[in-house]
Image 1 (cartoon, rainbow, N blue to C red):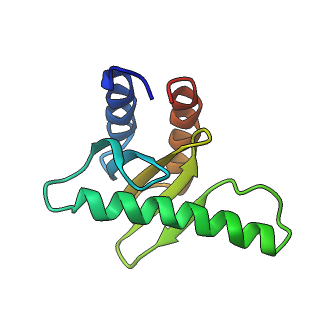
Image 2 (image 1 turned 30 degrees about the vertical axis):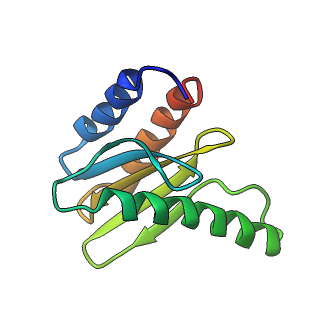
Length: 122
């Protein structure tokens, strides 16, 4: 991970600026520890970060067991929102949360653009 986390934080802020419906973004180490996050005050960052890492690892196991190739992203939909998780390198995960009003195409595009930039930093 880089010495300065500011470039990572800037990318996360860019994600949130892309749509008012994108509410949180985090880069998480596969151990579940937060690298950098931009989350609302009511979110328990440590728990969400740990669960994001676990979800990605479970998604990789599932796609392997189902012979679906390499995992692209894990998508979780709740009643009022979405969480999307993708790997950004060997040891890190990008997790983005958005309300159900976000256009999914925009969410996926913003995630891919950010993931490309973050892969160069982590």
